[in-house]
Length: 435
Image (cartoon, rainbow, N blue to C red; front, side, top):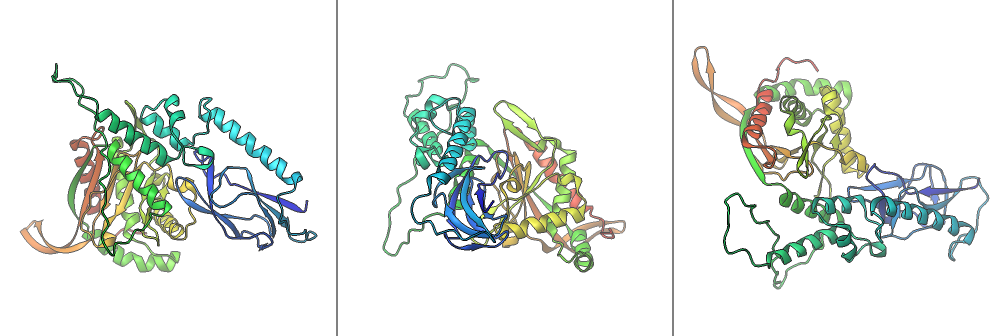
């Protein structure tokens, strides 16, 4: 066969479609094996699509900005060594266009039946999950005006609908009297954003796609979970001294660096095993206790945005395994090489605000998790140490830890005890430990 159909790759169990954000190859361009042909975006991550075969790009079947189902053909590639075909400048010949349209039609129809409950439009899993969480019926979904391709409802559309619906509820007159102190409290509603006035010299910068997603996710998290943050200060002198001795040995042996992040994650995993009710999610009136311990680690991108790759089954790894996973995910995050599966499925998140020189922070929970840990910068401080000969003052390496948690299911006792246990494991780090 001289021609090959490049299809939209399947990027995760919950990903049904992706948006083409940029073609890196034009029709007629040569393509090497595993060379990137286009860049795509989902509601989770941006990715590159390489060609599994070398050849020439004959036809691009979709334009930039189009939303394409997974497994649908997106380009026709003439394989290397095959007879050259004339460059296609007119519409796709019917022999190619008909099968492609048929496949896309079948995929869309199947998804619409499965996920939209026989509704008139296709709804992505993300939109359906938000609708479920906000008790939006299918009838209400059908009334939302979609701004996506072919009128599809996007995440921003449904969030805007929720905010407007809340504003309308807020205008309903409240009862004059409360008959019982046990009556349900009024529902908190979103207020319209304040109007912004512009002054001379002000610059308007449109948010990029990832920043819009982050903004929506952060607002949703604050509206979903009542956030409480607890703080402890940990003496991490043993960790610092151990790393100072081990980093050269490790780098020589493994050809990569060892940072504090995998060391922190190991302590977090131990504490989660001691307090498994931190490793949960909330589904309506139910608590889902997670069996797997999947640790998300916030990583900064060159654009300044943050992404949270996930170390799956972190409790099954030793320190070397955690270090390799941390380094691999961080490097590929900076190179925009992560797949949607690698930033989903987290059960607890760690973010290092100390990397920006901050001593502590109050992070926002990464839904649907119920807690997130922030590690501050490590500072040398005078501290009081208890010794058999009495108390002494010594210079120690100290660090603040802050834990934000969902007060619906994590009370102060659990949140505070869990945070203290993390600090205990850090302070008990064995300075003569082998790596």
